[in-house]
Image (cartoon, rainbow, N blue to C red; front, side, top):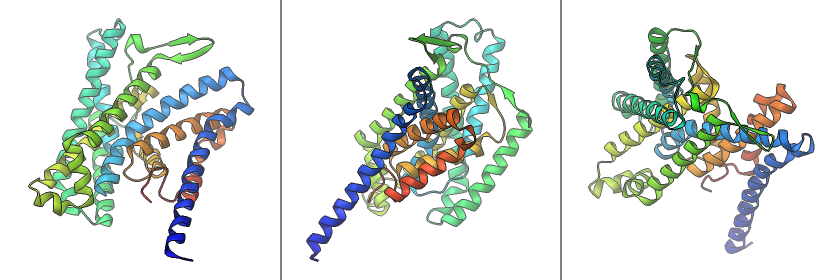
Length: 337
C-alpha cells in the first residue's frame, strides 16, 4: 500500500469515527420516544438540557485549565463549592432585606446577576492565589499536579466546613424565578429557562474570546509553543495565571447555578460534580469548548431519560456514554486527531 493510499484510508477511518460519534449523540435524543409519551419526553428533554447547560458551566472551566493549559486541577470541585457557598451567603443577605420573596422578574434577574458576579470574583481570586502559590511550581509534572491539587481541594473543603458548617443548607430562589410556565401541557421551570440562557451566553462568550480576540490567539499559541510566544514579547506566565483564574471563576459560577437549581448546598458537592465535569471533558475532547458543550448536553439528556425509565442505571449511563464515545472517537467528539 502506498503512503498516499494509507493516508486516505486513515482519513476515511477518522471520518467514520467522527460521524459515528455524532450519530450516537443524536440517538440519545430520539431513543426514549419509543417508551414514553411526547409530553413527558419534552418535559424530560427540557430538564436534561438544563442539567447539560449547568454541567457545561462546571466543565468549561476544567476544559480551559485542563485542555488548554495541560494542568490536572483537582481543586476544580473546591472552586465549584466555594462559588455555591458565596452565592448562598449573598442570597441570605438579600433575603433578610426582603429582596427575594417580593422581587419582580427584573429584580430577580438583577439578584441572580449579583450572585453570579460574586461567585465569579470569589473563584477568580481563589484561582489566582492557588496558581501563584502552588500550581506554578508544578507545570509539566502531572503527578505533582494531582497530589498538590488534591491536597488543596481537601483544605478548601475543610475551610468551608469551618465557616459554614458540615450540614446541608437550603438555598433561596428569587421569587420571580420560582414556579413554572405551562406551555401546551409541558411544564417549564422558570429558573431552568434562565439557566439555559446563562449557559448559552457563557458558551458564546468563551468562543468569542478564544477565537476572535488577541488574548484568545495568545492563549492558544501559548499552549502550542509558549517559548515562541515569550520571544514575541508576551508574558505567557501572566497569561496562564489569568486563564487559570478564569477557569476557577467559571467553576464557581457553575457552583452557584447548581446550588440554586438543586435548592441546597453541602461541603462535598464539589467532589461529586468534579466527576461529572471530568466525564464531560473526556467525551467532548481535551481543549474543545464546543466538544464540552455537546458532551454536557449528551450527559444531561441521558441522565434524565434513564433516571425516568430505569432509575437504578442513571449514574452508570454517563460512564457508558463515555466508554462508547472513546471506542468510536478515542480523543473525544471534537478532540484533535
